[in-house]
Length: 470
Image (cartoon, rainbow, N blue to C red; front, side, top):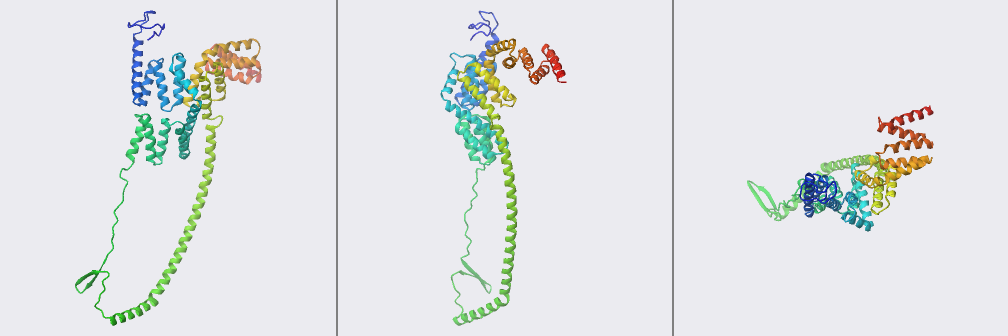
């Protein structure tokens, strides 16, 4: 352990033997940070990744220079499929300590596998797109995007969880349970995955079988009353008590009477019944036809509405996937990060960041994109600010105001504590003839740096410019 003040290796005493500073509290903080790192390492070894992230973040909050904790946090993020968060941790680690740092080795491995890194980067776009589709209620397209995401990045826990949530919404609990099982195989104690799994187990009915045994109710006997007695005999037994002649005569009489009853009573009734049935059938068919026509009209209206909704969704999708969309901003930041990882000159990185700041609104970026953007800017700004400021003053005193205006803006971008840079940018724009741009920057100074000398000078310049226009 080295002294925070002079960098000399500390001994067992509570003060630095070189600079005599009290390091007792500093030692406690470092020891606690190391203890939390060991706890995170133990949790990661048993695949308690959520717990490992929590312990490692606490370790870094106590001592941000704990390289072992920061590198392990990057590995845990990478295992959870969070490639952007992992890259941020390794870039920060390599900035703190370049030589002998495993973070540099991890970055080198990513550089060697550009195809794999590209797939992981595209999976981030698929996940963000699916999340927006879910917010819009388009679950079918969201499922497709998430399927692409987990195919490219099978360890992306949040993608599996979102896909499981969609399946739960669609009551496809078996598929949801399968996705959550994949999450828990990566992170055994993930609270959200366990919560979804418990919901599925409480919702699904373990006994979904409601089949009954068949029952046969055929009556295989004949029952009739003879006097005061109930006679039961098999259905195939014939009563032999009647004689042959009587039987034939009775049959003939029965036929004649049956024909008479049919002709005078049954047949007219049957004809009327058939007519009524035909009439009812015609009315039913007409009603069904009217209903189908109405259904067709309703379906046509629904189709028109769906087409209109589709056009609107395609326009909204264009806002995210177009050249100026949120996903495009993330792609641009990742491209600059790729250049940084590849060892591109810091002046080129700074130029790309400055150009990006003039093209997009940083506040509209996603949280991960904004964090990576700030980290990249922090990595190069201190190195570039002084040189750009010197070039700006050289161009200004040489009378090249078009060049100096842009350079002063860039100098303020790299070091916004140097308020003289933004003031001289406004003066350069005014001298180059771009009055509108000059007024905008003067007004920015008045609004953001009140009660300062440059604010007073900017107010006078604004009054003069407005008077010229008047």
